[in-house]
Image 1 (cartoon, helix red, strand yellow):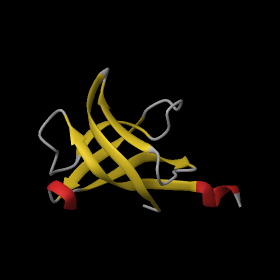
Image 2: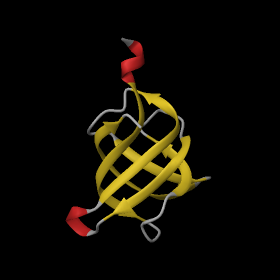
Image 3: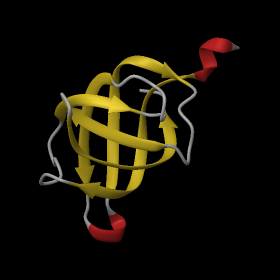
Length: 91
């Protein structure tokens, strides 16, 4: 069903940050596809180096969050960082 395509967030890895990675939830805009508009949400990072995991939550569920796509985090026009989506999250 169409509703099953929606996800409340995603997990990403291979992070690259232009700020100190946010270890506590940070409000930002999240882009999950190249041509998609950024959507409001929160992001936080667990671990570091190769074991770093990015946990993103959208304010509103988003359709077709797909592994292999880039997750890019913005504060206005400023790129904060991001990584590669590994999996969608239901909440």
